[in-house]
Image (cartoon, helix red, strand yellow):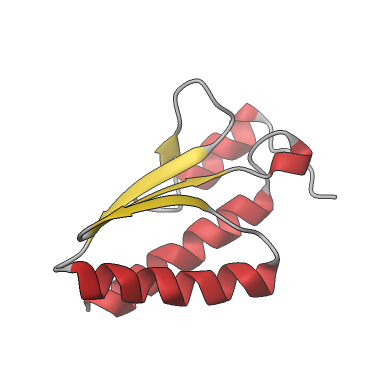
Length: 100
């Protein structure tokens, strides 16, 4: 099982992943991605889903047209772990490729 990050470790990790912030009222991190259109947003979600499945670590997310809201937390650890940081980093890279 993944180990939950301390507040200091989480804050330090968030400093290295652009746009991700702590979610109010939860031990979770989140980011809103905005793409050119629905096709780009859906392409991002498809690519991110493949990575998440390989990691066996699945995001909470919501898509409306060109916007994808993502929340990451490791439920069996009760909060943010290194797995969330790794998936957030991967999602940023995917978003860059998708909209690049």
